[in-house]
Image (cartoon, rainbow over the protein chains, first blue to last red):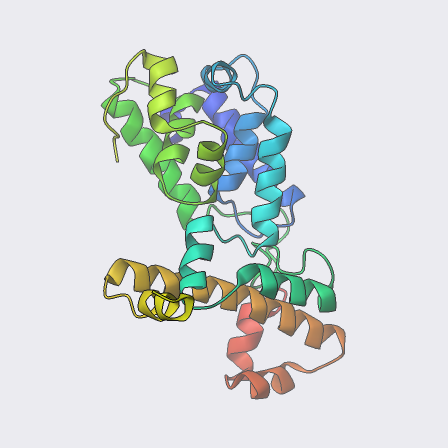
Length: 187
Length: 69
């Protein structure tokens, strides 16, 4: 699959592994791909993000990712679903942090520590790669660039899509600046 | 509709999507909580067997899940 990735897309994938390591996560999640994308310069994705006004707000995105991780990596949709059962995630995180320190409930810490240097792609991150491939096909692009990874992140429900949407980066907005149209989602 | 009634209605929502999403979120929350508590017990010198007894699972299961490889 990776042979069809452009140099920029490979940089994002490698960068995501580095982000996961830096955050002490045991696997690569879609948020790590998002953080990897923020590091890009002079690429299709960085152009699209700048066109949507994200150039100056990268730190705000990074902060939002850190906050979501601190909340056990639960998205707002998941937090709302739990609130529907009468479970207040913010309250639980506050209680656990009071007893065990800030960041105790951070996502990606569950389970055994990984073998040194080995950070597998989690299901969510694999889904993003497959979705990026499908998005490239939809747009009749021969290669998978970092803009397809960005488009895929807006299509799959989760923390990354929510944070991007909060910053005005949606699939529709991206297709408009990248392709000059507002095409239907590739799914 | 009062707040309590509304909450009860949402908790018992008949839409499977709402219920399943809540269960999946609860499982993720549970995994994090288990991780925090097991780490704390290990830091306090608890054996894997003691932790397994409290969790109601086998020593092998808890070690495989939380032990360092």
